Amino acid sequence: MFDLTRQERLVLIFLVLICLFGISFRLALKVNPQLNRMVNVLEDDKLYRPIDINRASLEDLIRVPGIGPAIAERIVTYRQDHGSFKDLEELKTIRGVNASNVKMISKYLKIDSR
Amino acid sequence: MKSHRPLFSVTLCLSLGILLDPVCPLSFKTLLTLILLTLCASLIAINKKSVSSIFLLTSIILLGLAASFQYQYLSKDHIDHVAKYYRSTTVELEGVVVSELREQNFFQGKKTSFELDVKRFKTRWGWRVKSGKILVQLFRQDNISYGDDLILEGKLHRPFDFSDDSPFSYRDYLSRRQIKLILSVKKDGVLRRVGSNQGHMFKELSLRVKDKLKSILKNQLTPHESGLMQAILLGDRWDIPQHIRELFIQTGTAHILAISGLHIGIIAFLIFVVLKMMPLPRKARYVLTVVFLSCYAFLTGGRASVIRATIMANVFLLSFLVERETEPVNSLSLAALILLMFNPLNLFDVGFQLSFISVFSIIFFYPRFFRTVSNGRLNLKNRWILLSVQSLIVSVSAWLGVAGLIAYHFHIITPITVLANFLIIPFVTLIVALGLGLLMAGVLLPQVGFIFAICVKLILNLAVMIIYLMSRLPGAYINLQHVSFWPVLLYYAVIFLLPFGVPFLVKLTLRRP
Image (cartoon, rainbow over all chains, first blue to last red; front, top):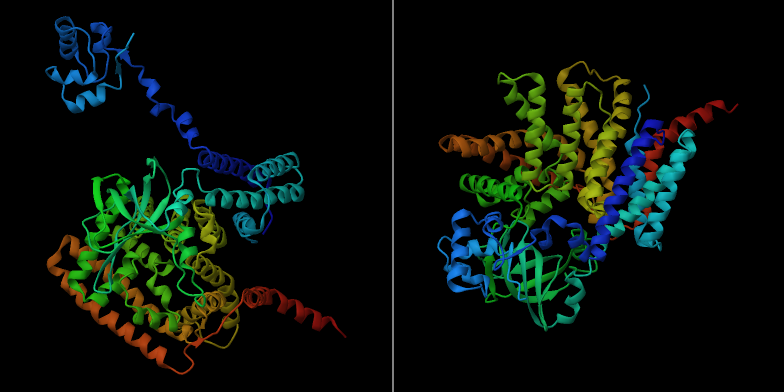
């Protein structure tokens, strides 16, 4: 019953280490929920690297997901006509941008108060 | 050839670790250190079999302790930490429905129960992000489904234990499923849906399929018949009337009401027979049977007995693909390991214990009893006699294994079990086969469903009649006052060690002058 071959012992040692890592990590997440944010880099807002909508060039704006060439041009035109954006909600006044677009693209945009 | 069962020792050691958790004073960091040390020692001594094995198995015992500790540890933002400050007040919280809904009659109204994964809790200082699962009891019917994001208002309390005399602890049962609290929402309590489809896609699909299958049974059968068939085919025992459930308990045939090896075996056989009629290569048939069985296990909610039976069946089927022999104890151990790593507290679940001990005792006793019988004067060349003898031996073997646990948990002994099972099992085989036919017909050809429904009605009612008559026989069952742990342990020590002890004693007796 307790007769384990060398190969079985090696495999079991490896499996126990994997299990131990999994259990320890899970417990660590419970003890410190902040760890979740540190580990989930892909979900981190920092990855979005927002650009300043008032200073971004046309090329920069085109590269923002959800903003194509047409909307980028309209944003630049809006800036020329009305001055700087005070709030990202003003984007809704631009043709082709609605509430759900604003929610999506505002992750990639910011208004730098300086 | 001597059987090699490495997984058996691993499972025993892991189980021992889990059992020791309530009495273990070690911190997690100490456990972690000890596990790493023992693993290193095992690796260093890898060429010395005994020493390496001892260290490795010790590390597995400690792993069991660590797994149990981790499973029961409540995270910092768990709702249980704040609930005690809101005991006598109405609370508001938000969460996602993560189980199917269970509706039952409650006095003059309805009660809906479901599990909720908490997202936020309204404290005196505003909404706070919280976590943890709770059981919601809503004292009305409502249009809620799995995956709905709800805001609810009600009173939080700990689960009640039914009575001190009852061996069953509802609080422990829920605790094993990581549910520490119940939220009771009154008939006119607040319930707002703020989102939907936030559950798992596959679970949602399986619940929809299950609802469809349940409706087929409810349309074709009476409520009690449908309740029984839902238990036998879909694993839902909520709609079985208590008096009928008692009949099955009194005759030791309650296992029929849980999907287990018998059901999985019949279903696997039927799937395989259907696939055999199609122009598919042999290996594809095995793979598809494994896939369908796994889907069926998922559909029926993944209880311990279902998972255990499905894993063993899948290992058996896959062995044909890899052309290797299976070792039943190894397969059983693998199933136990998977269930215990998923939830270490499964070890204390009655269903888990009964499921595994019954199969283990069949594996243990069947060859021994069969050898004894075949060495006797019985003519086993006759097919029907052989089948009957095998069926009886399986029943006796299983009964020996579960008798102790049933006495301990349910305070009942059922001497009628062997006879009742011997008579009922053929009916169950037919009921499962016809029931599956009814479900398939209900989905594909509803017009012919009634044919299967009539057959199911006849056989099911006949089976219940037989069970009823069995329960009325004198001495069919004996209710016990109280059974403590040590006599049960002694019972198992005797029955499992006796087959080794008897030959030893015989040899000892023969050696004496």
